[in-house]
Length: 255
Ligand code: 16G
Figure: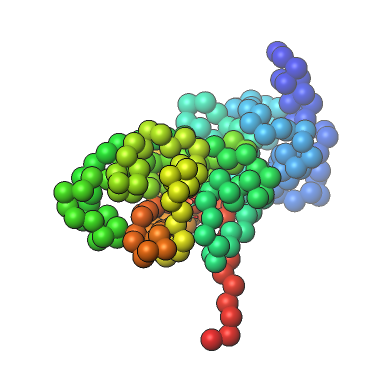
């Protein structure tokens, strides 16, 4: 038994928080764990006892424990990873992102005082798909650089983005480290306008695993086509953004 086990057995011991008149037992356990997460007694990424152990620590049935855990997972307080158990989920306040400013992920996160990072999931040079040919105004013999990245802020995964640009602008996608726009600006290139299409989607198993949420969770699918001031399309990015964190906000003016 290590220090964490001792703390957890104290934390979950039934005497401290269960009350006869406190409503359904699963809800009492839910609220108890929720409060411990909020006040830091259960820190982010702490692993929680397995269902059987939690049942024995709390004196509740496994069915009751399972019900409380399902609710904690559904509310984004706990993540379950197949084979490795349940953990306190990283907490991130909802973020509002303006739909009228053309900014990069890195700039957005810097503005919020967060450290952004990018993990390249795949990257290479390809012949463009029919959709890319149309969106970027290419001929079919021109090659494109395509890069798929997992975008994080302060270590929390927020989005998966696939960006396609002609090799004329990005000859080597491996060179993109943290920021695509920073890489372009070093070549004196900066998109000046973009069109975004936003739709709703549910995360696939793979996407959910990368974003550390549950399969089927709601997300926003955003396709951005960005243009140079000359009117030429330069970037096509298709991104999946966590629906539990992002709010995209548009300012409307009287027409
Ligand atoms: C944003 C853009 C994306 C762009 C990326 C560049 C949206 C919906 N998408 O995520 O189109 O490629 O920023 O960010 O805002 P970077 O310069 O940090 O790589």
